[in-house]
Length: 617
Image (cartoon, rainbow, N blue to C red; front, side, top):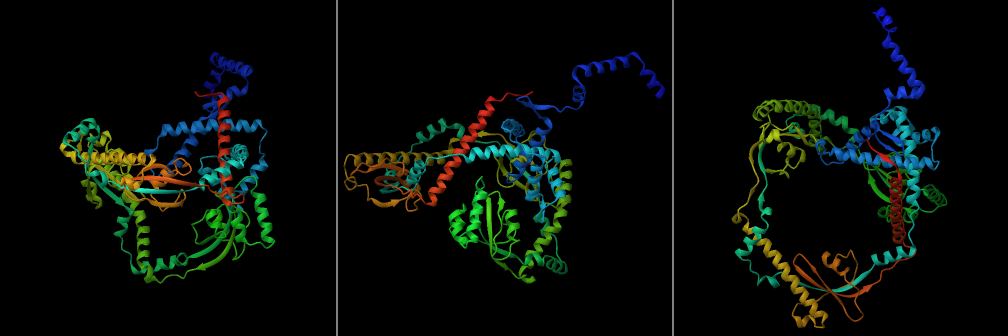
């Protein structure tokens, strides 16, 4: 064989191949040859720089997982993969434009900067120290290599610097903030008279001709949708747990095992929360300096904390155990000694200074007090493994069976029935979109197969089949005439109430009195704010939409309410205050500046995107 290779290597074909390689190297270089074999396909090119397919697919996977995690009932079948791919590609293009802009501004991080950022990230720390094993495992869970993660951090950090700079630069004119606060704090004096539905319903008449005309004009609204009656089997961890018996010996052993958890420790904390931004370190340093000078934590919380609810109580958060706060906050709190104040603790909410005010520990309850709770916990724990086994058996059995009788009998499960399930769903478990979609699929609806086993909740799975299918059909007039009559009556009453109210308003504007109109008595409301609880919300909304009254004359309006219609007389508009040193004004300034910063950053992104040259294969 070696001799054959040696002889062929001297042949004409081999010489031609070698010649072509030499020509390629001389014209395009080694990179062209290597790139032809190892170059990654791209999904888009932005200003001459590629977005690789590998990067694109990795982000698509991460975005799919993120959207699944945000579902109340995660179901991969509910994901719109085409939309996800489009959204991801658009975001990667925008990201590439921003990265190129940052590079053009000379913003960059060296390897030492990257190392410093990574080692300070709490998700990569164990007992407050950077742990390389945790770092590597976390990065791999993201579907990335360490080098890729470092490069992604390098890019994103500089982009975030630009974003933060632009968003923090948002400005709002002080006069605008004050004027908006005055409008927000404005109150109004007004009168209301209620016209009930009974005042007009006496002359109401809906004829059979009215009902038939409405039916003919709105026939599509009176169609019974396509429906199925379904048989189904439900497998749940809870049902399996109920069948598991727990002996007294096992219960006592479990009680001893759980003793440490049952003696719950709760800590009472106070905090000062500072919004993260370029001035946060300076603000924190100023607070710490004033604390050291003897100022009270409570006063400083009221002055500085952006957590306005706790700030009013001097930063007090009350008692809480583990698992309540953000991970970084909890770690700092449970490391404190009573009365001590932490250093700056960064969370997704901002930067905190935390003080531990008190620690309380509950005694371990007697077994008799929590016996049923522990029995349930232990039964569910033991049922978990059984659930996985039975679920796999049910999935296989239902897939192979022509009906549900065999799988139900084999596993000791009950067959239930649901009637009138539409494509919009039905009663649980058919309120799960994935199960309904399977039920109306061609294989199940026309082919007579069982659905796949669908997870409709935490440790709850369902398999179903169609028993009866009914096509959509037009409902007869006699079946819906009562509901049409009720609908027409309600509409007619609203029209008559509006007419009555408008007539009263016209008469009042012409100078007549309410007494002369025999429309009832005014109910007076003084100094009512936008969020006032004393009047109907619809009335309040109408009151604050009315024009200012001229001196000596009221402004009139109407508002539909649950019981009828309200005629409104607006007597006075009381200007709201805007104290220069008020916390409300300061918060409003920050909010408006933040909105302006967001608008400016969005405009900046759009500007860069518009001038970028983007090509997609």
